[in-house]
Image (cartoon, rainbow, N blue to C red; front, top):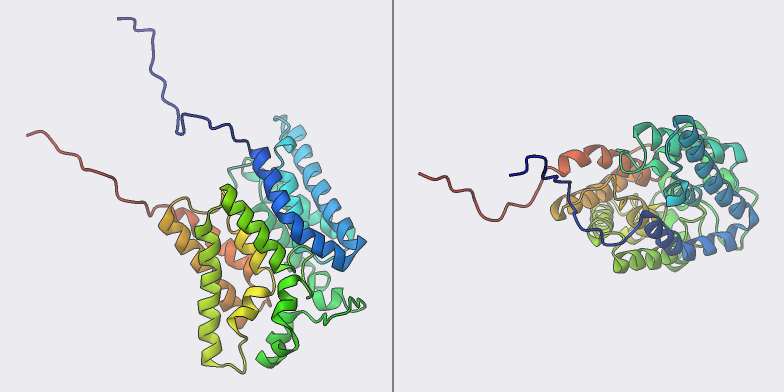
Length: 322
């Protein structure tokens, strides 16, 4: 027998199906396009400025880290560009250029590269970058202040802020259909629920995201908002209002479904999505912030390693020889 021959076993999967990270990210960008076009049409050239600066800054941050660490150049896989794109979609069109750059650099360096790059980050880089700028510069991230001199032809008071301050009666000023098609104050790419829903369905049908997280996320929001609403309908808005405002749709289809930071098994995915939805409404109705989507997803991402321990039972059993 030839002792020089060794059996080398590598981690699964053992058969490459030909898919690439870059192709997945191209499809995510394509899925985001309907919502982006609506956002640009509503907010104009300032929105396009924020989006392009965010994408460019994220790619530059990744390139700088690649060069500084003498690692392979990784901007061609598109992950940095997608992180920058999603960050830009969450931001108001009026934010100053330096805030966009700081948010993009924080997303890539603090949220991703410090942990070893793509696939190693425990938290979604986009959410890290957005959370940092939102906490640090509340004035620039306040949608009511951002659009105080902006007149697009529809009611521009931030819906979640109005309900937070004045109760459910404030929700009557907003048409659910208007909210669904993007006629509301909010992030550039987060205002159009219809566009995000179309993009999310596309990603699900193409197999790039799992439906379990997105659907359970929306169900968690609906059920929790319904319970608050029936408990005090004068104070808490309807479930549909909560579904169509803030960052819910972009959170359900583009943020909570991130491969690296979400569970991989069926039951954990349902628990993850449902818990995210519940936390969103709790933060909105009881917490300090108007919209709880970003912090809800970040919180559940911290618990993701525990959820991943919930695994399906193995088929069969081990029988010891007598």
